[in-house]
Amino acid sequence: MPAIENDAPEKSDKTMQLTINGETRKFATVMTISELLEGMELKGKYVAVERNLEVISYTQYDEVTLAEGDRLEIVTLVGGG
Image (cartoon, rainbow, N blue to C red; front, top):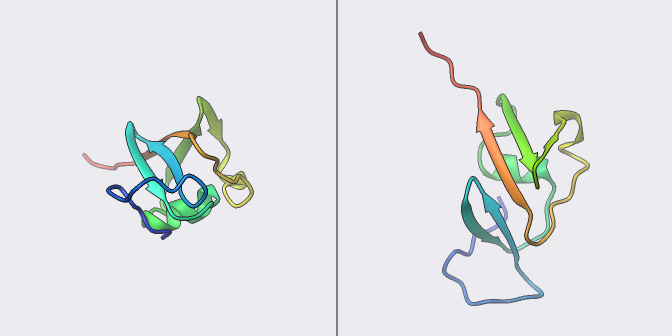
């Protein structure tokens, strides 16, 4: 996973800030949704991703590159009974 730098000093040209499920995080590199999910150990699991209030089809996870300031909501399917 690209390094998360929550307490790192600002590096405007070298970090990217995303808000994921309401939590602001900084990353050391630009990435796709697929790469983010892999780093969060969610790749291959049943998840839904909303980017800036738009639901992204799972078929586009490899193609959609995240940008500075993106707001993401990531939910996983939880089974139970």
